[in-house]
Length: 609
Image 1 (cartoon, one colour):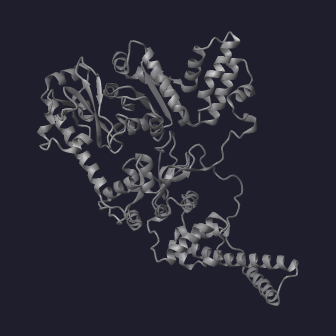
Image 2 (cartoon, helix red, strand yellow):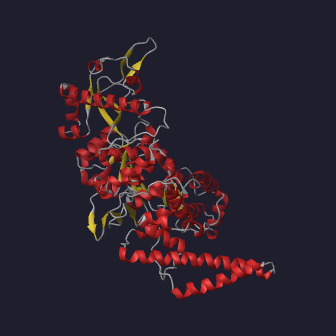
Image 3 (cartoon, one colour):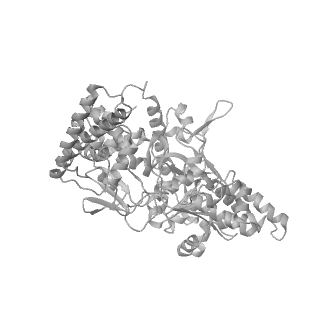
């Protein structure tokens, strides 16, 4: 468990602009910095980073957060991992608050990563002295630069070659990392032998597994590391670490089937390709890629095996679909795979084919209609029957509606009849335009639903409540929370409850965050107040405060807070007076309050922020 004090100190030490600029080129624009959003495809720069508030926000997709939140979203890290990554960048050591019994899990992970790194260097060195392996790579058209870029190596044709770099060859962590195998007779030997080695990196660039390909003939053709504490096949994509920038630049991610496809395409300048690791494309793969781009193109061989792989990818994508993303399928001629196609036709032909890939909805309809004879009632009924378990899994409401209409047209039924057969509510009775909503993400991170980014205000803005005004001022000057009368703040709205929570920190003697709005939001991560504060931060991302004015605004808001409290008490007493239950003391109190309110009104209106 990382102490909250350390998180706050870390955020006060770093600058969110420096952190994000490691991953994105930022351009100064007024008080903020801007870039094209890394979390959705766009042509104009709507991703804003505020150095004064230490907060980022995309006006296009709604992504937002602190420096920690950015690392979690951009690199797919958990909260603890993101803090450690940020601490490493800042050159500080992450402490422990004593709630964990030991650091053993971290030490174990580091030991595994060190073993993988040492093995990667060993395999690369072995490639230099392996003429057969070098000849194989040359025959596949790979240059030395590309082999070095992907850290390609060679596992010698020896049973215990790794013993050269691991004197304690029987060490448990070598088996835990999947580098060696222990047979039933208790004999240990290297997992990879006489194979071209493709290191598999996580999104932080650390080697977590290997893929090995035989040089010519032999089975299995490809051999992957087993699942380990570092490596889960259904969550990792080969080449993603190197492809992230190219994916954003190209505007789409290309998913192919093998390591050599990724490497061969990179050789021809097509660097936005990734590959699954001996498994079908999973929903997690798709969600990972949709953090990088809003378009994914799956590339498969045109043979029956490629069609089966495409069907599995299509089915696994249905729950991950959104109305603002595109998934498409590129089927190559039966005589080609991506490697051979790009060598035969060239990079431009491949890019053109990817640009014109068939959208998911059309592929789905082709798959369904090919199975059914639409000339007969039985065939049309079968179409609806076969489509139901697929269409009802589509998470994107507008795309699902389009598919329902396509099924209705093909089957000769009405849209309502198909919806009834699918058990779906009629679109005429539902809202197809989603309103902005808050969504919960893993580890309690909250933000706007990417399908429903907050719209720009139209027309005259409704005046904020007193609690809302005070919260906007307090997030700019957190120490002002000590000046707030907690007993006068209403707890019947989110802003009031957030203010009370901030005041509670002050009363407990806890230092308030000094690292900008981002730090304040991080202090309340995993609480309802974090959501409220993030909403406030989004509204204020482009607002610069004049300190000569905000003090006056704060004093005005305090007076308004007192006036609101007086009004509430008067209302309660007047309600009691209607029943004739006021005591003499209460009648005297009511008179005092009415006079007090008259004096407050004479002071003037409270300004809005």
